[in-house]
Length: 300
Image (cartoon, rainbow, N blue to C red; front, side, top):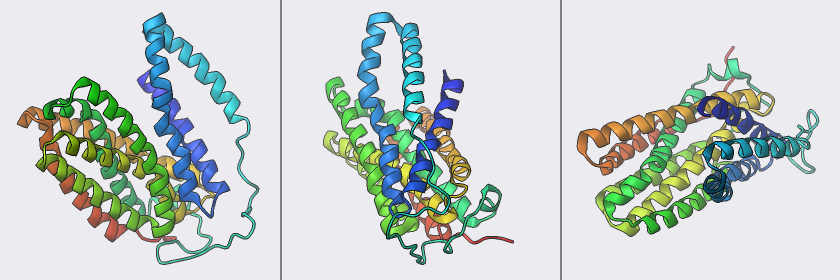
């Protein structure tokens, strides 16, 4: 399940993002954000179905039925997928350039992309952004118990977190279009840092929920900032391959976040000790974004 299912998700995940990036060059960030928003909202649909199936037919049969359903649904939904014709642009679309954009018409393949400093800055900031968000997802339940959330309140809070996770994707996607990747990244890290310090310093239930909503918002935000930045910096011609490599930062952030939170909990006895470190990583992310998230240039 973990390896084969995870590989399937990884392969499938890039297809709708690459398609959105090519069809909406004028509002790529918003389009990508709305597209990956479906990924964020999916749990609200599938979780109750899975819970009902497990209670009715058991876990193994649930896997079987879900596998059959996903196979059929995904094949049907993949039929209309196609890229626009080469050189296609929306009617009235004019390529705009700015200090935050790459040279007009630049298209870097994967080999050229990894030679740029902006790629490594993007990969590192994406890792830090996902580390904070995925760590929040992993410890939201046990940390909630530490602050005194009841099981009912915690369950309600998870639904609220999912909504913020979804909302962060189109919001930060549109912001990345508007204010460009560097500013969007700095804003996200400022919010992550402030939320982390708020959770750590004011251990009240309402503050805890608000802080975690902000962390989940920014996890969703990075799932829009990074693919939009990939499009802006390196173009759309090789977008699928390029973002596939950038997206490995998500996995790195997940692994680092789980290991870090577990080690800190074992060492200090509290999940709350995680948050000053997350705040420090946010500061590091701001520095990397300011220095490194800038227009890509072809290296010859």
